[in-house]
Image 1 (cartoon, each protein chain N blue to C red):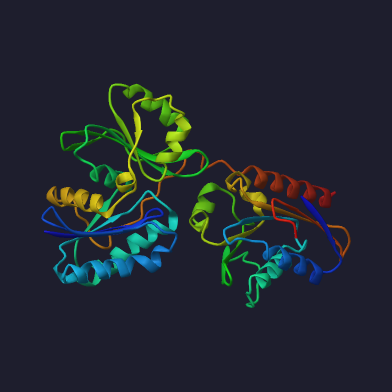
Image 2: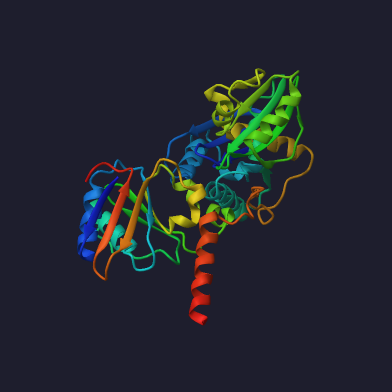
Length: 140
Length: 247
């Protein structure tokens, strides 16, 4: 487990960018953190680390966004997912092993997350500061 | 009667061409490539290499479920797309049944299992006896432990596990059912050949359907209604906050 303190959104993105460099290409990353914690910023950094320049936006409405880079990045938002049927019909299970999966609001599908995953907890300390805890990843 | 059959319901993808019960050709891949990219090239190569004009196909068969959400839709949509302009009949086949049709000359029980996550499988049992296939159960979603309990009543028969949940079940049973066997790789997964064979039987009994009638078949998990734990907690918290705001 590693803990990092970031003092700006840009730093959060840079931390994620470094994490991206340690990935093999089939990891599941479960993001935990409330509204405005910086989950999308973290994903943006991660995408940049995988060589993806497209603008990363929150997939709250589309449920999943797909980006092509060094590995394919699948960016999920589970905010509106409330049952197994909801989750099944996102095609979530069909993506496993096909690329890097980043999951916002992973709390909502905890029972269905693979055991082997990287957990990322983003906690707000102040307006600009965040404590970011990373479990299950290689050291950054 | 020429039958073109496809399967895209789980990780493998396959296409087979059957002519009056004779297998003219079959392609099978089991990679992680998206079926939306592999299926049509497979079908196209199969038709070309067997020198078959798509207009000469009499029946288009597809495994319409159970299976992965995206996979089932790719298969069903592709067959709809091929049959609509040609106005040809379709055969909607159960993925689980197609697996039994891949190994008819076995005696015993075929236990077809597909991984539905959370220790549950899509399953059906078939009794095979000297070339006949008799369905014992409907297609259903069932927990692996319930399935083990059910299988324990068939201690007189050999039981063959097929499907992408076969290894998972075999390992979960931990040797408690000595008559249960894992099948070898060449028949472990669903093949379009089995789909075509099941379709031939449907055609003989006059149960083909139109392109419009073809629909994906999804099975619900018994626990599907269960709200996910963390979600419930979140709603509870939201409720509490709202109550606090109202005070």
